[in-house]
Length: 443
Ligand SMILES: [Zn+2]
Image (tube, rainbow, N blue to C red):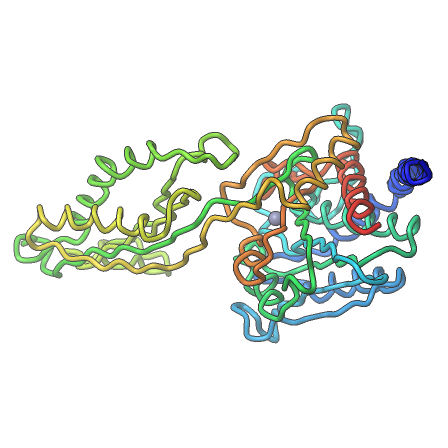
């Protein structure tokens, strides 16, 4: 009986504290707005990798005054790291006794501005909206400075209500996610920052809508195909061998056999949007013949039969497939063309492979965040998988840490678009979900 009473009391305390915790997040709404605006106003454009040190310093100052131990880590030797454009990362840790560590990882880089903006891309403008209450505009607003700000405010609110707890909270702001993450999460993972003895739970606050948990992503296989011919005078093409015609035959064979085959391959992964539930291939580029001079030459090109033609292909594959199978499909296309065209020769160069990854729905971080979403939003969490990769690949492959998800505020479709924005209410709600997650895992 006494035991039951104690359990009931503990549950009641927890419920009361949750109310206090949620109120602590809500009371920081203005702070959440200011923090997001400040982050947007540091234009961390990638490429080339601007102001990385500045944003890390800004975050370090803030988190240090709130008791975090901070480390600034430059990814020396990583691709694109240079003295002109150093790849700086920040890792902040707050430890309170033995227990597990919950890590929030956000990338601090943003993509190019592009055309079509009606707002200042680095103004961090706060605008009232009839639909969403209020929005903050700017490059990186949803992808993902809003998510970074939400995770910081969630952690700070938690620490105010629970100055002592069991375990550790980490917040990282990392470089270069938009260009593969090699100067960011991959580098940190190689240094052991995501090893399972240091970190047990990871949330990446990418903009996936506040009621959705992203479990992982499809795989990537990039390759270059070159068809080879023989140069000759363009007036006597029969004396040469046209590499572009060979490539035409390759593309025709892809249309005839490969695209229909990929359309039949469907995954059980909950990939969104619907079109990405099948295997896909994109032909990224095609180059054949003599290169066009960069100085704007507008005269006649030299009369030559092209001896080289190249395409790059971007194949996204499913958890039910593997890279060997994906390669074999392409080789089959090339070999078929070879059997039909006596002079045909080719080279296939693999450029980049990332296996698909998907965290188990029963993983602790998935179950905890799903329960917190239900508490805050009153709805069931939806589970999704991303069509493209993000930094979870490095945490999984290098860090060997499977208990990782993407969860954060913002609408995925707005990422990389002109007039990108994040909703203030979305940020507040997802910060509440993150704070409840900390309470569940660390108390
Ligand atoms: Zn992102």
